[in-house]
Image 1 (cartoon, rainbow, N blue to C red):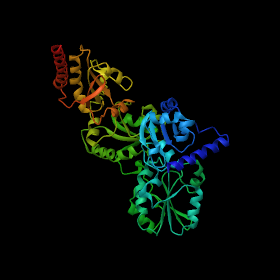
Image 2 (image 1 turned 45 degrees about the vertical axis):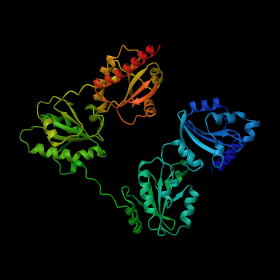
Image 3 (image 1 turned 90 degrees about the vertical axis):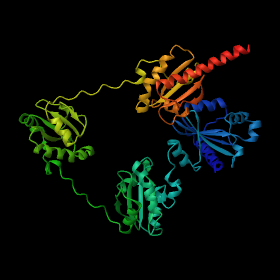
Image 4 (image 1 turned 120 degrees about the vertical axis):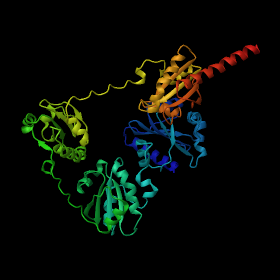
Length: 515
């Protein structure tokens, strides 16, 4: 329970103080100190408790805090009235909870969520590293049939006592492939119980470097198969299903040796393969050539090779094209790559006797043929699109830092929350800008825009209930009134504001009549 956790942390703090280690435990009882902590630490886990212990804070990382707030009745009245004030101000009553404790998480200075994971050091540290991420694998109820190993001692003990075959997954919590394979692995573990054991062990910490060297763990995940405590094989079907794992466990076998890949120049290809020595002479002999600079290990290059080969075959059959498809393995010959300004692999350059006429990031046969036909003048790239903020308009562009303050001064504000890449937003921009121009001289009205993709604006857009782009909100002196769901043309935007101003005038007339 969280109450028991508090006792463990208290003991750990006393131990740290006893051995004179840099203090990880600090007292927090004053509301101002607590607010300062939230401002200076972006990731804080707070335990409110009435167990009668001092107010503590345990630093879990450089920018994270695990805080303990005293709430004992006796100490509140006699020795520490500040603790009671603090918990009242933040509206927390741990006494109403089972065990007399409540564990809450604060992110970027505000409440984020209630901590509902197991009350262990390991779980809390994992939570603070990624508050929105998944819980530890061993805490997943669906992984109950996987044997989770925490220490090297437990690992040795398992191999010594276990008579059944063991398939062990060495993994790291941050590894994407591991996360993808864990559900498959745990599903395989629920199958034929009693016949074999599937186990998992996080070996990313440095303390397991010796273990990783012993079993040749050079990447994550690595699967090792053991029989009677002895390592026999690696399992390497990383794209397999739970059924594939179960089938392999019925008849374990070492990974099959991979067939060495035939170098591209040695295949049946009509592409001319060039080297540094023959590169210039080839261009002298041929009027034009499309050259692909590639590296043998590059995945994009391998993906492009079949299309490039096919384009070469088409060109060689054509009578109206006097150009050639060629390739240069740039993996070992850097000087030539530099000379022709290649900034990466799988890039093609259309070369005549002088280099670098145009670039093409991958093409089909027809496109390749059209590139190699005269005229050989590359098209100029389109000019970069100007951002809305850089265009002259009467729209006020706001962000998290000035949003509230700017709207407080306006009786009516229509705010467009948008993303620059959104086509519906782009369509609305000219109409919204026209409406802003119509009301530019009215000091009580503003048409404003917020780019939700920019920095801290993302948090602002969440706070304002933005779930799609564009979203239009109407505010009255900074207070949200309603969402605008009318026409997104200038007629709709202008008509909406005119109706609001019309109502304002009616209220003024009514007051005058009453007087």
